[in-house]
Length: 105
Ligand code: HEM
Image (cartoon, rainbow, N blue to C red; front, side):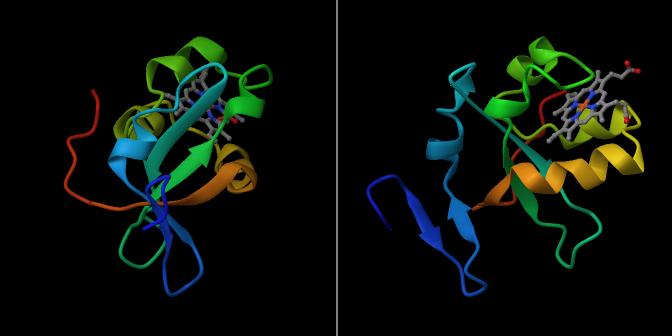
């Protein structure tokens, strides 16, 4: 564990604690967590969308609403295109530690 609550997994992917993730809820630092059903184990991926707020076609307010939370359900409900899902990878910063959180509705 480092002081910011993050550690590296075997695959050299950073794992973030929920105490860390839940702090990134402002326009200055905005993270969202979305489950990746296309990967083995369906990891909860963490995205830093701070620099994406202004250009997100769905607007910045919806990202702020879900900032610091797991929003897989809301993300899927929008019916994001394949293009959108492909674009997500550039904002990926790691995975969330525990897999037992209630998604925000
Ligand atoms: C890195 C994460 C995200 C990326 C790259 C992304 C990308 C996009 C793109 C490209 C669109 C245009 C429509 C499409 O191509 O599907 C879109 C629309 C939208 N997104 Fe996101 N999005 C992200 C996260 C989110 C999250 C977390 C929410 C929360 C629910 C959200 C809500 C919306 C909404 C409401 C629209 C507008 C849909 C419409 O106007 O019909 N997005 N997004």
